[in-house]
Amino acid sequence: MDETAFWEIIDASRVAADGDPEEQADLLVERLTGLDPDSVLDYARHFEARFNRAYLWDLWGAAAVLFDGAGDETFDSFRCWLIGQGREVYEGAVHDPDALAELLGDFDLEIDGDGEEIGFAADEAYEALTGAETPDLGIPVPGEDPLGTPLDLNDDDALSARFPRLWERFGAV
Image (cartoon, rainbow, N blue to C red; front, side, top):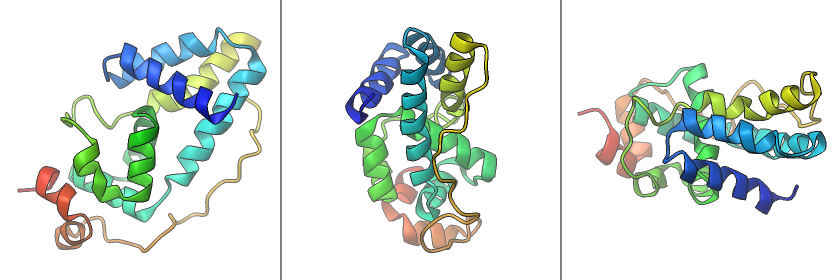
């Protein structure tokens, strides 16, 4: 599976789910179980590489603005959700997290940003196809700390200065 096919699966599932991440995760599992196990592993490698690439201080800060705070689990779930938003949103956010102010439509904390199940779709599909757990994908694990310039995620002044457009649209009032 190449990168284009990966993003096509992501996009088709998001559109069919009408943006609901839980429904998108179910549709991803359904779609992936229609593939052979090696293709599911290819998909999982693409997903994991993008998940790790998004381990950035600035993206964590953007998540903190959107959620009015973001711990480790929230940030992990956010990165899965971000991948689920498709290539344009993902790449735009990785390049410039403040651009999420323009890249995102409405952002509903009850629905959006929680992509934990999207992150498990390949594992569920692989297990359904083979009866085994997903093997090690050979993707390097990021370091303990995100890449980039550290940021105090609890400092509203620092967040509003680093993400002025995002803060204006979604920040604390």
